[in-house]
Image (tube, rainbow, N blue to C red; front, side, top):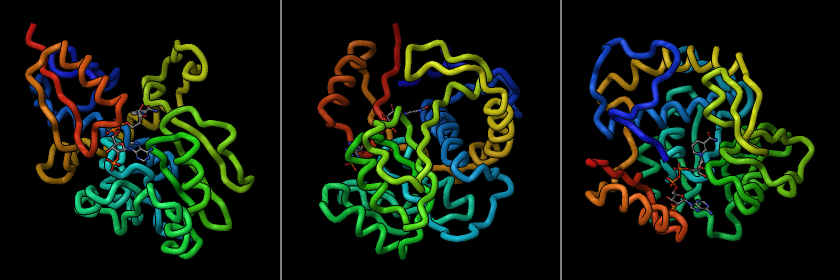
Length: 255
Ligand SMILES: NC(=O)c1ccc[n+]([C@@H]2O[C@H](COP(=O)([O-])OP(=O)(O)OC[C@H]3O[C@@H](n4cnc5c(N)ncnc54)[C@H](OP(=O)(O)O)[C@@H]3O)[C@@H](O)[C@H]2O)c1
């Protein structure tokens, strides 16, 4: 969940060449999710401006390519010189391919992980998991090549899912980019990470041009509602029921 416009969360460092610009909800979502894409960049520690060419395998798996985070990740991975493949439901295959996925795989299939491993010729070394539960980890770990690599989740990792020693698991929390301690109960609390802030400053500088250039980054399709604050509660219920697919719920608060 995120809050924008007059309640916009300001970054502690300059990011915008145009000061005082009013950000439309769709643009705000693009900016927000591009910021999430830094998690993808942390997989390879390359910068958006000067992507490191892939040394071994060009593939990056985005588990959950139709999530709001995954949809932006697909685009940023492409722009970074890698080839994204992803999982999602078949009705979202066309959408994720338009965003840059070379191939999409149905995570409901019992052979999903094996299919990805075969498609990537047993070389997949980077996985970005936008779901991060036991089921998603199992598929990601099956998909990764025999040499292992880096698995990055967006939520705390269920330790039971870590079943291969040559895979390095980690999970990122966007809030460390502010360079301050994250004061939340475990497993979310984290000490200040000055390196994350330094990385975020560079990342925001290098991606701002993409956000400001029309058509460079496609924000996730919106599912807007005029239901105000009560709508948010209904939206949370929809999320719990798994009733959201390939869209971002938006509620404009008027009161
Ligand atoms: N660490 C951080 O800093 C950070 C930041 C932002 C978000 N997050 C986390 O990232 C996750 C994704 O957030 P989001 O807003 O991007 O999600 P979202 O857009 O709400 O996700 C909806 C999508 O999830 C997919 N999905 C649901 N269950 C799935 C499963 N079991 N396996 C594969 N796909 C599944 C559905 O795909 P199909 O319809 O195609 O089946 C649907 O399109 C959340 O858990 C959120 O808490 C973490």
